[in-house]
Length: 115
Image (cartoon, rainbow, N blue to C red; front, side):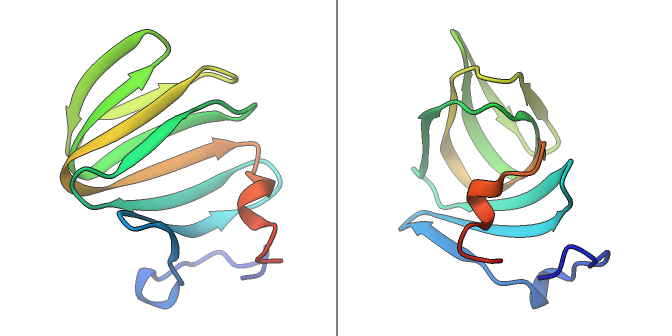
């Protein structure tokens, strides 16, 4: 994928298998922002972690238990959450679904093997 790309058709973009129940599809980025689809099977766990990036996530399908710092909430299709820079966060998939993550700046660590 070239940074000059501006249209992303889901059926033409490759999925990266992160583990048995989680896969990721990078669908757009430049130096300032990145959007990523993340598919979860039921009981998939996005482990608690933090990063310098701010993150906004939309739940396009499914149901997830979301932890941000000391707060925990169950969110479903149509809901969203925001993660400030360097705050611990993670998810547990309660019903199979997909998250759409937007990061600022770009997650260069996601691109290390793609450029």
